[in-house]
Length: 183
Ligand SMILES: Nc1ncnc2c1ncn2[C@@H]1O[C@H](COP(=O)(O)OP(=O)(O)O)[C@@H](O)[C@H]1O
Ligand SMILES: [Mg+2]
Image: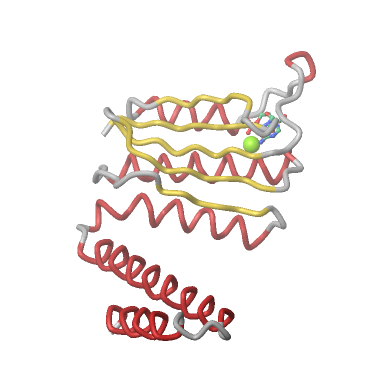
């Protein structure tokens, strides 16, 4: 149906383009055609997710849920990006990556005074990583830094499954927290 819609709009667009008086209509038709193409691509993506084994979608689903909950309780503009297809991971690793995501987002809420945060999930050659990058105030100076338990505890839990936690400055002047686990 989406294909037929797209093709129909395209044909109409070709007919309309011969009438010089209706450029406005032509633009609208083009935008409709683009939307039909985009809807078809989204549908394909959703069908792929539905047919993938549950372990493979578990991480994406967990991180999306963590991100959604954060978005709902704060005013911070939140985006989640899945950069690559994700390999299936043991449930314990999905759990610790999700815990890391939640702690990083909680820290954005408590400490960052950020306007926006981007959560990225991606496979790397030897594992899977989640990065949480905000555009807030950044980490305090080493001297005035409080020894919190959140990141230390996440780092321990990641280490238990062979993973690591990296905290660095983000490109936007805020903080970037990256949790990695081997696959
Ligand atoms: N996104 C962030 N923006 C600014 N500062 C941060 C951020 N995340 C962590 N911090 C700083 O690092 C400290 C340690 O964080 P954490 O270990 O989670 O402890 P807690 O959240 O309990 O203070 C925080 O107290 C805060 O000063
Ligand atoms: Mg914390």
